[in-house]
Length: 82
Image (cartoon, rainbow, N blue to C red; front, side, top):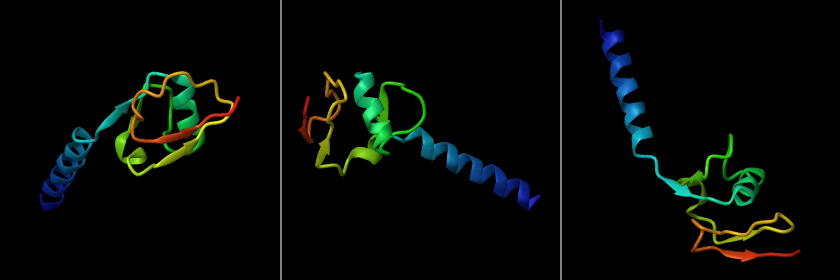
């Protein structure tokens, strides 16, 4: 019985953590692909990235990636090269 109760409590805590995870909207697919390639995002292109993964970035080099929209990254400094 204690194991069952523990399992239920653990599942609720885990579910609660996922409910409070914040995502940042990233509408440019090329920008999200760059974030995935650089290890800041993972999985499929879904127009969002986990905010905790990017909140400490102060600069990001995005060369030759065809990015046209930096929505979601207003606090970063970017270097572009075509």
